[in-house]
Image 1 (spheres, rainbow, N blue to C red):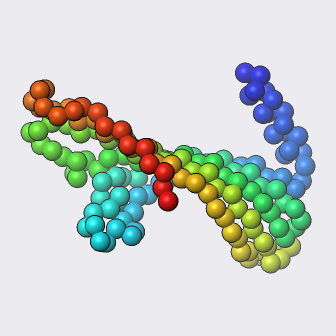
Image 2 (image 1 turned 60 degrees about the vertical axis):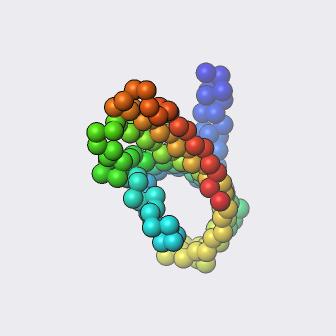
Image 3 (image 1 turned 135 degrees about the vertical axis):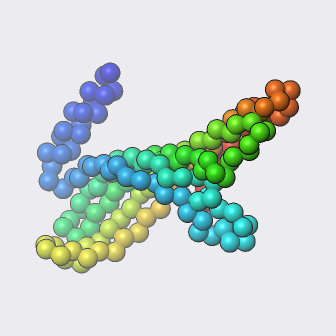
Length: 151
């Protein structure tokens, strides 16, 4: 509780300064098959869209240069038509992704229409969980979990 209050107080002080931006977003995470032609199957074939939540902070060094970071979490559901194993049992999957990115943005104008160029880098972590409930209880393991950082 103390850490939460400390965060709120420090966030209030940051927001009082005009050169700091704190915000967040809620959106959709949409799986795609980009880059998977050689395998014949991609992430978009096995997963469906889900929610994405993000928090962002940005510090404006001057009116034309900002530095910032974003922390986000996305969750994807399973594509039931792909994972339908029929009479063999039931499959339950979850795909979760966490991302932490840092970025710098240079704005070409101070006011009005402000085109910009930016550079960023970050890390992504994907954690998948699969549970298979066999129609024949003596067969197959019932839980598999894979956690793999994305490169």
